[in-house]
Length: 253
Image (cartoon, rainbow, N blue to C red; front, side, top):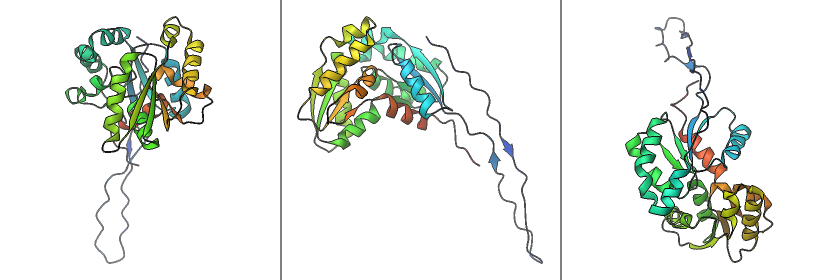
């Protein structure tokens, strides 16, 4: 597991009330205290099934959300078991892992187990977001013909269900494309080769209004594509959405 980013206590000060009364009028009631001080830092636990996406998420945090505090949990065994036995087989371990991590908000970056993790939010008592949900919402807004690319076949079923959920009453057509040979490159650490295969597969897609890169690990291929069809990846919108729900309480001031 990766290290935990420590978070210092937030300080707040209460400004003295100032009351100004007109001549001969009874004193006006004091206004409520105004709380000032630093804004609470958004806090987020990220659960990964591979260490590969961590640098990308940290770079997104540094560029777009510099005040955010991220804690990474990396548990590859969850994906291995979910692929072999189904996503529900990891529910108990997910509950224990997320409950032990400090509550606030959790972002699950593995699309295969994302739906299982989201379903645990009521039991956990804090928000859990699958990283691909904001991307799926953007995809169904972009058009009715959606091409879904993945490098692991177990991703297709949960991604298709998520797109249908986000589409609601809108009619959408989803075509799936397994990027042959890409996952083997990923497992051997050949990230460049992995992303190149994903980008080539995206460029080969025809007849789609939007292309979805279903796994967070595929995000780097978005910048390598040359297709004129919009290509969507999940880390940037997923991180932003999870940080919005992870602010620990309102800020007044």
